[in-house]
Amino acid sequence: MSRAGDVPLVTKYDVPALIKVIHDSQTSIGVRVGLLAELQRRGLVEGDPHWLRSLRNTKGKDRLAVIYAAGVHSSPAVNAELIDILMGPDGAASAAAAIALGSPGNAAAVEPLSKAIVSKNLRVAMAAIRGLGRIGTAEARAVLASAATSHPDASVRRRAEAELRVLEAHQGGSR
Image 1 (cartoon, helix red, strand yellow):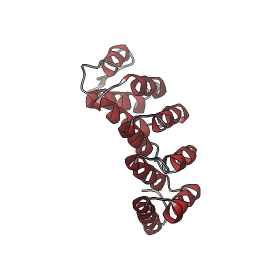
Image 2 (spheres, one colour):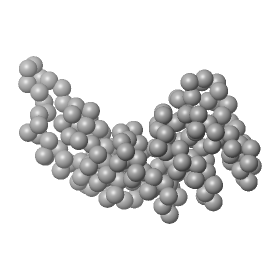
Image 3 (tube, helix red, strand yellow):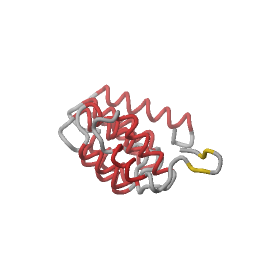
């Protein structure tokens, strides 16, 4: 996708064919999300509609890869979709969404992640702690501190304490 001499290898005229590749379930998920990320980075596509379509339509084991990749390219619309997944019935997808929502300073994710900490699914609760740790804001730290002292599950309390120690060691709060 770089230049060959003075001729770009990918132009805006190639985008329609590449969009078909992005949404072709026969194409490897790694190629699909990588291509979308690169086209978005180059300003050749608006990422949100394609991330949302992929989050909504990708099934099976590929769905987790889309969730993680979409979190890296988050926006308010992508965050909202990830929050819906977080609150959904699929524990693996919910845990992936909790981690994906954990981008430094993502204040909009703190409240839904605080709800996920009390999930009966321990994997989701632990992922929510990780997400909050990656957000690293004062509000995220307060949720972690509360979980560290008052969560009914001892393993969740210990994990929240550990996340707080990591944040303190990094002093900036984001990793």
